[in-house]
Length: 433
Image (cartoon, rainbow, N blue to C red; front, side, top):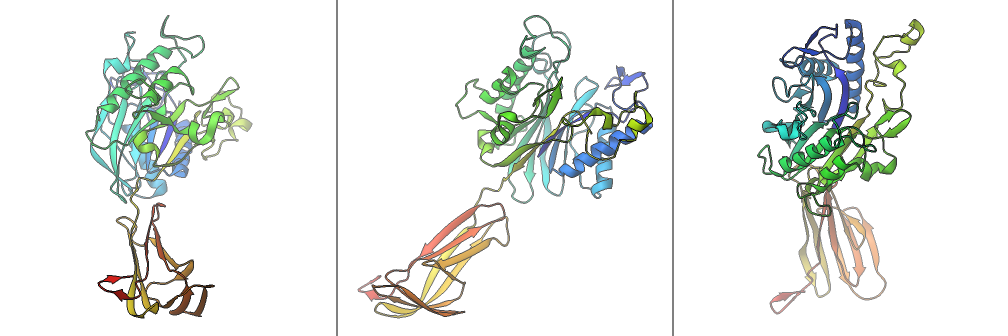
């Protein structure tokens, strides 16, 4: 999983004419000419190809009537990575702004389940009644992992920036402009997710995107608290960057100060399936002199450009590892009795490990710590005193006071299970011992 702000990726060139947005009446952004767009495109594709995530949430891509910018980006990725590597969710524009969020995914790895859901209510877009949409609509999609069949709902967000004010009572002297707008929208988002907007019936939810709020600011606290607005309860979300990278995590540099505006928040059902989270520092640390923009650059400065991931945006990408397959293999351990007399006799090792997802899970066995193989014959002598072992290969003779066959199966997702068995030496009455 990844979240990446692609810094105004517009396939419509910004010539100064107001022809962008769903109504084609807004100012365009991004590249000012074809050369700049090629440079921007190459850097963005290089970054996404290196990230190589199965699902990616994008921010700041052109909100085009025909999804032209999104389709162009996916086409470029497929040219680089192979036909059909990526596809995108939905058709047509989302929301009234010139930019939007979007979701791309690998069809060979995950399958969209049902339709996407879009949160574009006035209570979310303009929660403080300013009169215009402040946030971009959120988009949610449930996916099924092909390998495991497990479900996951991803919701991508881009909340109002701190760059312009929202008015008295909304702007905060510490947390920045429009803090109340972002906080109210975060509460609406948490409530919306609690109602299962995609109708998946599955509890695993991941919030990703540019929330334009730093760690511990009100909007983040509101999301972490979940729909009941109380922390320490079952509907809480976990800030994965904070959990895995700590207090020094960052995705953005502003006026010489580092912090993170980009997030991955997992609810309690999903948090235990997260294997890690990080910010890939390809942008925040890099000077804008190496970005795609040629404005005001001298030839020598322009020559520093390279079609690589570095300074492809002003935000670092957030990357999350998930292990959705939580089912361990089914393990069976048996010591099959061949022939016994009193406290000694022949046994055959019989074990198996089967997994619904991994066709060949690792399966290892030992008898009292001695490695054994499936089908191996053992002559066991149950007797007090010091243990000893004789033989090799398919036949072993082992003496000990007691015996325990232990078999452990581990699938390629790291799930494991164990089974064990003890030998039955002789019959007393109607009972084996």
